[in-house]
Image 1 (cartoon, helix red, strand yellow):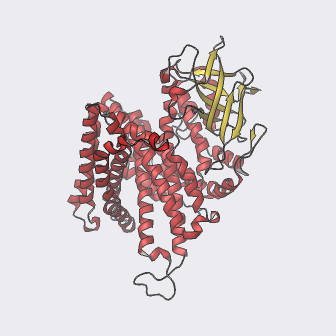
Image 2 (cartoon, rainbow, N blue to C red; image 1 turned 90 degrees about the vertical axis):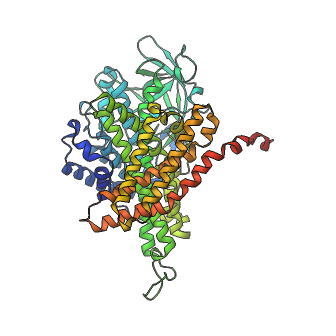
Image 3 (cartoon, rainbow, N blue to C red; image 1 turned 45 degrees about the vertical axis):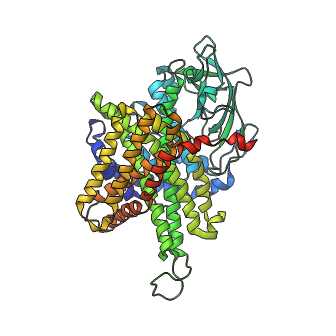
Length: 593
């Protein structure tokens, strides 16, 4: 059973992450509170009543492959068409393209609920949304006219084709080829792997976004172009024509997200699949990053969505399951395990991590929105840099927490958590991929330390840390005893984040790149934990005294996270600044010989 936490989602959007400010802008002046409430309520209803019941069904059925065709789980196609009939696919697409033109923040909130319903379902439309944005920003008017509307409505779905057997995270090794035909089209040949929803029976056509190299392309990522390759050609009147030379050669048997077909795609077995260039030649990676940056936020939201589902299920089980007698218990018989201190600790850890993931993802979405609506060049730069800084946090912290929370959920269930029938194991299996795809979390860490910390000569991250200090100071000056040690622990973590940030930037300036990279992963966690703790505290500060229950819960979450999880930051700081020598001295090849 899943129930969308509408009140908490709405509060986080408006009071913690800036939706209220966005509503004051000219671009989103029509997004009133009533409309926000209506969207969230209906999205939550659909996720709870229509998507969530299909989650276990899809997990058991998978996506059988036969003779080049993929069969999706029973009811999957009907569910998808109910979803697009609700207009959800075009939530954030521009009004000019037939979408609703709503901010990324609203799409993020809805996406959380879709993923709580079923991560395997939500990932398909997520890639279509990315394809829409890539076409809107980079495609020719002719391509937009032929493909965009049906992608926006969801009548067709889109995919993202990057990975090849020899080219995973490093696209320098990409080998797929694109040869000009002479009529404005290109013949595409090559193989792509791990293609989500690369083949399925949910829509009549699938529009593939494919990275490939032109014959005279420069080496490395500077020589990659992006092409639109449809499963079926589209006639001038919009009807479907012949089948293109692109086929699914098989589907992967995965640890989780069994309802999502992960395909090996072959282009050009019969001479070459016909594709159309998107954007400029040899500028495909820049076009693809339009999809990938939003996809990284979307994957972070996957971690958030599955964590929320796992927490709700663990809480329900802990309230129902009786074992032993809790300390101070006065009632006869065994106590619900939710009354035992260790289970309380676990449930608090699950809920606080879930709320941190929610706040970070929504804050990232807010920065993206502000970068679009900002009027001055300085504001546009600021918000674009803030979106860049927050994207690694949104992707990595949220998906790490997704794995941690779902693992805790299995533990709360005890032996029954290890049994598939409870569903707790599925949440853990599903969540695990999110730390890997769309750039592993290690890659997010490297992006953070090598590309995002140096933004504006390092001044942007300094300003970011100063903002966190303002929150800590506000907690301290509130003089609220219910905050406990929150202010002190938060200040301690911010001090450590600042110290280590300075260390990393100094090491970069000195050319000690290996030292920086050795500490990249613990740095992202240290700074992400600190940021998350500040957002929890901000939520408690902004919570109205008129809702005593919500105020108490938010303050308790902030206090618990600060007094338990923030303790990690000191150890992480030591790890970053002292472990590089030992890490670089390690020789895996010597051990393997």
